[in-house]
Image (cartoon, rainbow, N blue to C red; front, side, top):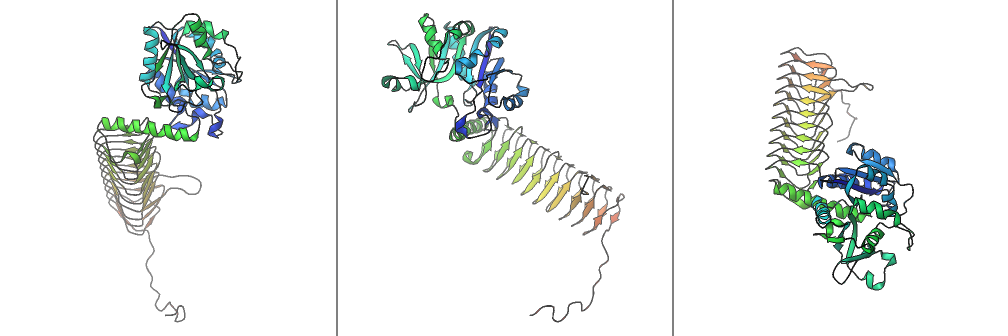
Length: 459
């Protein structure tokens, strides 16, 4: 089969976004728009991707560093044909059979739509296909001009059209598939004799039609997916559409979502069968949630690996691992590099950071556990703190299996509490506690009689 090469236009600033960030790097459903486009293009079978960059291109290239794309620089933005002309050498290098041209600000396009556009071009031996859409308000878009037989004659831009032409509601979406041979042969013939004095890629279609070549308009099944994002308002619209798609995908796979309008899940998140998501649940980044979990309400997980049969109520966790059969929350903060093993109980107002919590351990409430290795079936009393920072360096605590930490204990790291050892309530522990020992780190109580003077307070 012939090579398929995609050229992704990502050189513009996007002035209507009112942002210092290149437009294509604004995120929808957790992924920069241009990266979303690349993922869809790859899924549609375009194994080679060329990204045209310009405005703050170092940021775009840094974001796409791991995508294995080819970058081409466009010094001046002189139109879409000019942009494609910068990539001619790369297109020739790939010996492309077909070239997809797509904008980096169209994150809603589906791979199935791109496959259809390609297949129509291939099966009809056409020189090009044009993805079109019907718009109630087509203002600003190029119009598709057809002949009496419904075949495409040309595309007219908004500023160049007559009143009759601008009354047409079928618009050009800016997504095309070309025969690489015909594109490369015709592109040098494009001029800038138009209102904008730009080199329009759409002029290629007129040149091909004059030669008697086939240029086929292909209407999108859903015009919504062809929307480009040029403003914050459109960004929010695209976010909502992609989020609904993701939620519907998960529900179709067996996930219960109590209120989809108040559940936010990014594109790369995975959720297992029979998991229930309550309102206010936010799942971000590379988060993976297993089967039969109950998440929420008001639970946010970012880059979290969460196993099966977990209950998380009002939990904020990021960059950590949660095993199986755990009961966590409410009002819990799990910070980076934390690993919660299995059957652990974490109650209200607990914060854990860079720690390993082994099976069946309990941290019921009002606890800070940082930089600690905690064994199996350890019990933390209310108000326990691992004092891990001396003002300059972080130190670790080690608490072995079956240890019992009394209420309001301060464990001043580095310190080791042995197996089945106890600490007395209210103790500050600064030395290691041997196995099965009781550690008491508090001063003897002294009561001073008649300490309060008569005039200290008034009744």
